Image 1: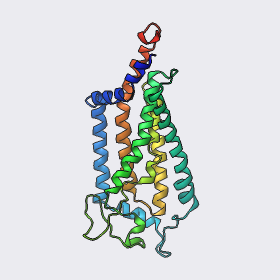
Image 2: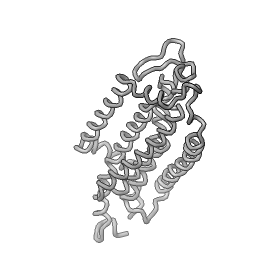
Image 3: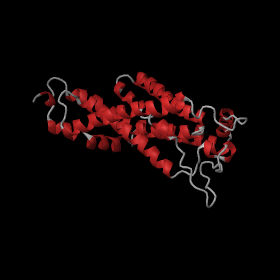
Image 4: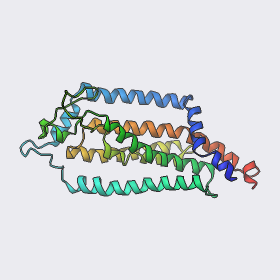
Length: 264
């Protein structure tokens, strides 16, 4: 494969494919599912007390503490060690994609190149977008609320904090985002094995939810904080998968014997 063709099919190709495929049927289906999920999560947070009921179940009122707040599994193993491991893994994909963009790796076919870049962008964008959204959030973490031993008021999504009350910066869940780029690994099973890709993505979303659940046990987040992180991860990864899926089958044909790219 010629280097100039490799560069042409890089990030610019991914973005061009993205713009083209946002108008296709898969994109419309994805937008429909995301819209329905957003309404469901929004209803849970705004119209029900599920967040509070779960936090109440995790809080020991007799001891005025979340028993799991300083549990080694949640505070150290998950919040420190797992975060480091996943950050290194995400950084490795970003480094590989950046290196290939600078000096294309000759043995990488175009499908693999696009898949690696899709994962690298997911590892970058999922935590970054969620961190930025947290900065604009009024919601406080459970352990900061007066009802759980803190001093702050409970603010639902779309509600404004009272004047003079600081913003909580706790929605969406930040720690879960360190694992919620993992479902993008399903791209390595596309487009040839869509069912396996879906199963892998579902499993890895479950891992991300589990990471968020451990922080809920600590009193660091409500359920909807984790669900919104999962929603944003699904939106980002799903958007990136659209052009990555479309590039793969065309690229296999390009690299077949007798094609223009097979002659150096």
